[in-house]
Amino acid sequence: METWKEFYNKIMDDFGFDKEKDVESARILNEIIKKEKNNIDIEEVKELINGKEVYVFGAGPSLKKHIKIIKEKNTKNPIIAADGATKALLEENIIPNIIISDLDGDINSIIEANKKGAIVVVHAHGDNIEKIKKHAKILKNIIGSTQIPNFEQLKLNLINYGGFTDGDRCCFLAEYLEAKKIILCGMDFGIYVTKYSRPNIKNDIEIADEIKQKKLKYAEELVNWLKMHGKSDVVYLE
Image (cartoon, rainbow, N blue to C red; front, side, top):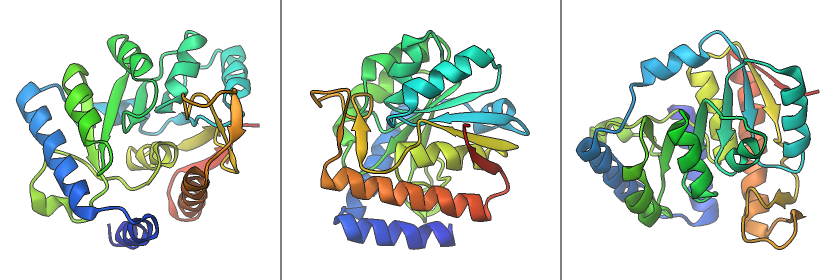
């Protein structure tokens, strides 16, 4: 958490994000989980990932190509999907085991996958309060997550495993749950986004706006940090 605190403060200052809004969002998510009792214990989730090779799907330009490779392999390895990547996986009749989401991707795909057994890690941050209020209560088998470094002091039934974007948080969750190997799919970083990441764009792939490009740079930095310092082996799908 001390290392994450340094990243967190740097990111929040760089983007001008409101830390108090992060706290508000975390409290709201915590209250919804408390009321709805729709959460799952993190230890149950750990059984899915611990000691295994895990595919992590981001929503980058290589997403569809990598899904086809995985489909041809007919692998039974666990899959963790970042938010918008869920829709692309469903299009190929693949249900991810875990979805990491701040609820700004295709929510219908997330709900559908959740109904079919996917666990959803719902992430609270200052910009998605209304989405949490609207959608968190209708999902089941969820885990609440926050990015606040000192969240233990707030006595919330949430977790913080590090990470900033949905994609790199998938990797940090896999590390947190002690995956043997993290295999990156659709994790291109760079300057391009797909319709799975940004549903409102006109074309399948477009150049990302300045804010998204900056987020992708942080995501790459965090994944590289994890490759250097984490216990899980982190590789790109060949």
